[in-house]
Length: 190
Image (cartoon, rainbow, N blue to C red; front, side):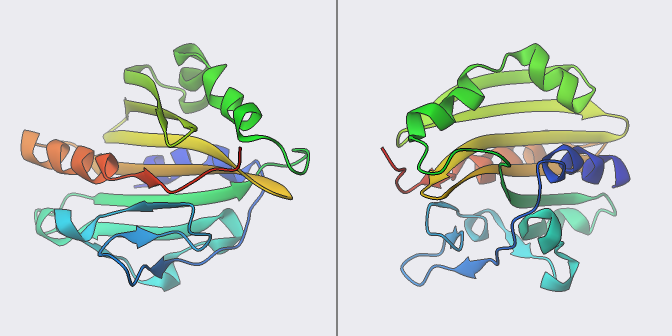
């Protein structure tokens, strides 16, 4: 678990933004406090971890686990971290914030994770560039979605990450990818 949490560490170096998770009353999906994005983990069998385990000073806004998979004695968890990007100009256009993903290569992310990536893809969701990648680090499999949101006076880096100890079977990996596949971005500043 330490290696998985270490993967979160590079985000904390950017600085922390305190935010708290909330449940969207309009759907079963969890929506971040700003309303900018959501994921639907409940439909995939995941439940929140005690909010006392969150580190809001590091930008944690959500931690979840899959109870069925946890019963195997193997770590299976996902988290959402949102941190303010220091020195980002206020009112940055989303197109400029997207360059932080568009201009990074697979090698850039491998330097950040200190591990070769087993998958890497850049896509766009509702006007926001999203990097999707996975990698192995020690005993852990890691799956990430990373994007930047321009939110008026500030720009935030958001990481939606899942990790599991090995061995992991195909059903567990497919379930994690299904959770990550529910990421929705509800609107970005032009």
